[in-house]
Image 1: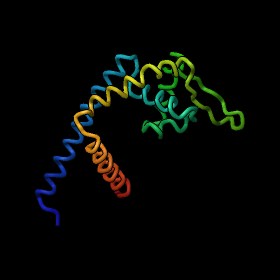
Image 2: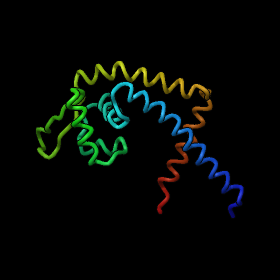
Image 3: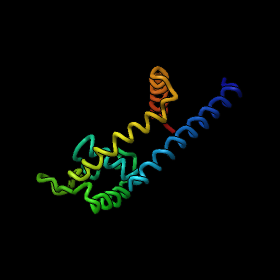
Image 4: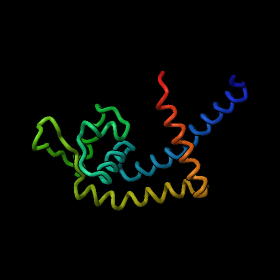
Length: 149
């Protein structure tokens, strides 16, 4: 049987996780805004920058965004010259998003700064503490994924 203290501890963990997530997101979102992007635009660019050309239909799943919003974000990034749409030669139903040279140059400057900012934000934790946090949060996320509600 679950004790009242166990339940309170779970609630406290949820609150602490939520506040830490919010604090990190506020700082990173401010960084994106200072560089003319919103978090979703950055996520799309970062995906294309690191993984290369992606089918438009799959981008939403990879960055955890509703597919309807992807068209809007891709349109904005395309207007800025950061990505382009490329038709699939073998299947006309598929269109890829591909980062342009301009987008790559932009990310070559922006991404290392983003990495350094994250490193500074998380520098309060030792390497061992980061490894432990990664392990525990993965365990938590995978266990929840396996639950059926």
